[in-house]
Image (cartoon, rainbow, N blue to C red):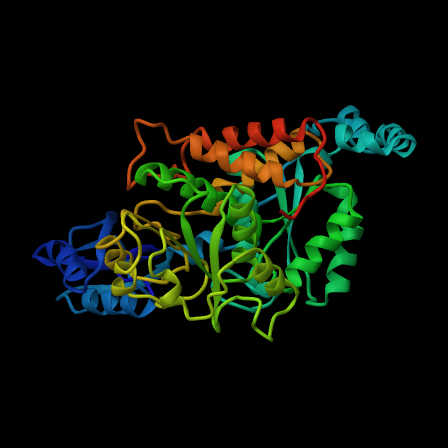
Length: 469
């Protein structure tokens, strides 16, 4: 639940008020007295007796929005005609569309774009399949694939409910990297069926972006698809998150004057995101890491370890700490949370080392209150847009895929992920770097280009195989 009014719960109330009197001046007061924020007030129709006005305002949630409407309706002389939820209006009919890149104004153009002229192009590709990258949308198209099992923070809500999120992802690909992406929502959560479905559609795409597939299923889906396909497969929930975390941590450690090789890092979360973050941090030089899940620290003495947790136990927690998360953060230099809300307090952060770094990335409610964390930590980052240092995957995946497609890469390497993180961190100049600016805005004009260039250079025209660590 939002704690302050947010555009995510923005409504427009169409109402009528008497042309004379105090009703118009009371509208803004009514919204503010209900705790909302007026963002626009437009007169859409005026007469001698009545004014029709659209009042647009931000609320905290749907109940709060209704309370604002009730407050407006209580103003003397106000008649409510219609209440529109602006977020739902944005999604009406979907957020993306297919647009032709070539004109079809006459028979000549139709004959070249379609039959009979297109047959010559099809035959050329039949002789040399690599020409598909040059002569079709394949060179600039990504499939955004989900099974709807881990959508945002909403959980297993199914493929239909996942579609608005995947549409949004496709829109971000286009906006930030000029990539044509298309949502593929699969009505199955069987690993074999997911892998087979993606394998069958792969010829039409230059890359596969796996999205919102729950762990541990996502690990096997990605691994098998990397083995089967000759185009890059990238699980954004894992590797996009990892790139952004490493970039932000690189700059946060610069702020506090520490090095990744020397700091103690405590992580909360051993799922898809946590696993990928850990592996990238280790590849970047981290040596002292303790990972906790809901049962406490992951260590080799636990008897409940699956394959993923066993790998974590073998590569972290050298001292064999077996306690809980609160004990693990004591004296830690860095906390990275990709888990659940409210699992730590400000008092827990106070036990960390001097000039601590806290990344509380659970969304929308972080692992610890950012305000409480800032009382004790030198640098705090979250996944939210209403605090400084937002860790947002849109900083990574558009540029990553732009670089992969430009390089005609066939796979994704750990070196590419490190290069992407380094490039993202470098967008923040030494003059700009500070406790409240360790990662650039998602709208920074240099982000996607810098990440793409680093990935393209790392690929060297062809990507190397993905190495786990």
